[in-house]
Image 1 (cartoon, helix red, strand yellow):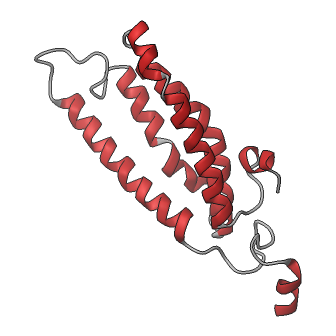
Image 2 (cartoon, one colour):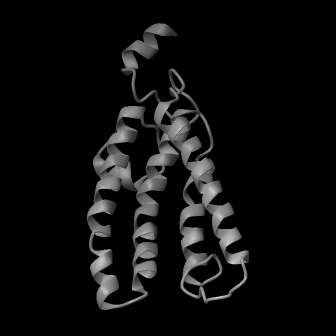
Length: 162
């Protein structure tokens, strides 16, 4: 599988090593881009939330592609990746709109926006821990499954087992 397919395709399976390599590339790019966000906030106050949301949405597709292929290796539906990936940008949108303690936070405002933010943040942390365990540490199914051949074992070894 090429790097282009790794970051753009939702078909097939990848092993843990390929998953970690792909995610480390995404994290590295996100860290490099996010270093420019504070300087953007200085020149355009309030724009850091929008810039962070745009960055999250930009890395969402390649992160989804890698996560779906890893779930396929575990013989699970790729739709489970939505549980790992959607809550973060959703919270950022709520913060941008001022619903979850973001820009519209005024002195004396109700406690509710902070409660929403804390609950969603807790859910994001739990989903993140689950994702790291499920995708990064649990072994994939041995041999071919409904999503394709085993990405770790050479096809000759799989045929020899059968």
